[in-house]
Length: 256
Image (cartoon, rainbow, N blue to C red; front, side, top):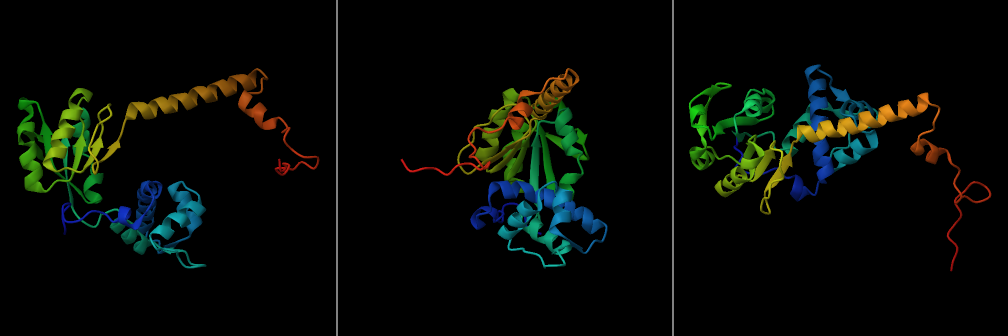
């Protein structure tokens, strides 16, 4: 099996849009579930529903992969699993280092989903000298002084940052200087990286704040409904348009 430094996924050179790339793991998860149930084929409608997207968008996404399915039959599940895995670079081994082995870092180290998708946790790194040598998920924690050597020895190109915000940028700089070109950032801060380095940010507090916004809006709509008040957004939808013509059509633009 190849390692992460041998080649990178071809999605950019093929011109696959970033939005499509972001949906490929959703399709792969749904397809993997179908494969485990020994389902041989799946329609675009069924797969789109399982992945939480609309079928037209799914068919457009798959056209970038050169996969169009068979009319009346659908898509071959096993082939699509292989095709998407190959496009995402999951047919090779990706060594990963996790920096910051607090509660979150330890939880990430124990997550079994990495290995099943081709991501091998090559090392766990922490700045606390008392953590050095302690096993987490069967892997001994190493001190940050060893960071550059670990990256070089293991051919690491993906780093996971789970440190406090104040340490994240310094860790990021060291990862990049050592040759890491992709970073998954769990620290609650924005990282500055040079061109050619990809950063994906995961901020659970932001996601919770977004959910809080939706909960507050739903509570406001329910309160308004109980009081018999039409919410402004609904009122705008119900208000007849003043831009319509006598037959209810939007009038054509007239020449000046």
